[in-house]
Image (tube, rainbow, N blue to C red):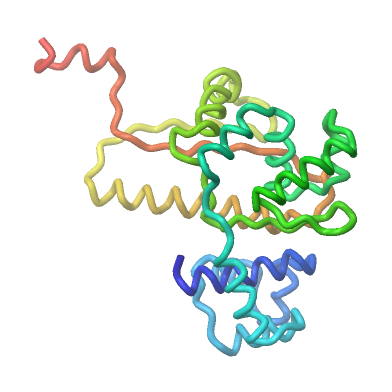
Length: 246
């Protein structure tokens, strides 16, 4: 992760902790909402703007550096054994999934069949796994980095792969808040690279919007999943017609 990425992450983290959003920075920076979002997306901060944001948040540059250092110590991935523990315990996986998506302890036990005692024990376990930092009053802070990911073809990816095939695609995608887009094209390597960059930006935008909406109550949000994929592919029906297959 570049220093610019670390700076953006630290500022986003402090905004989140103080319940602030990009909208709150519009007047501070004398910028439109779209300009503030672009500033954080591109990470092109001038020293003057960094100081203005720090003043608004009540921290100095030394404090910002400390936040960056704390952020850099966060984990990028769990061990295979830890992932397997999640895969073997549906309640623990559900609980951790909610925490990773910013749910409060109270929201989790009110929504799912998880008792307060079970929830406290699971928070303690996640704290020992260094996934969260457990705080008084059943509060927590996440100890995962922005680039956190599950192990490729590991227990959790395999678990969700099964859900994708049996549940996620079991829909016509014609209801409210649902959309399915499928497109094919013949592209050069350069164009393929451009599309991959755009897909990564879209995934980052989803994460940014998630951070913006975290201060909203649960009844004003809904769990959403987005699958982005791109690969060379031709249906077997067409492949069978190729001359080199005859």
